[in-house]
Length: 131
Image (cartoon, rainbow, N blue to C red; front, side, top):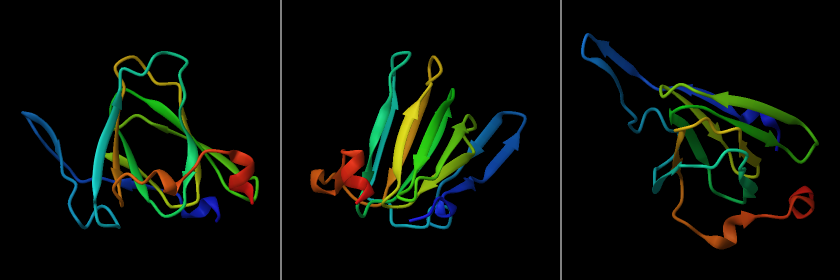
């Protein structure tokens, strides 16, 4: 798997004098949404993620604040993407190692997933992931 499959997706934004509204519907996310969860109150210096998924695809969105997503593939390539806009989603395909770090105070990470939770879909050992 190559990191060229990683994409930052524009989420439609409707703006008027009352503020902004962003909408996520079937045409924004390229997979069926089966799970939604969010990370918040992440202590300073804490890392989240540290795994890959065998089948699951995800889109991450910084609903509030900012955080960095470090992505790695099996070829040794690495990419860091900062998420800090609620109308941008990071599409992460399956078999991509991800680590989330540098959460700002008050950051909220919304995760949209293609599958419900399945502990057998996770690869937590980076050496195992490489093979």
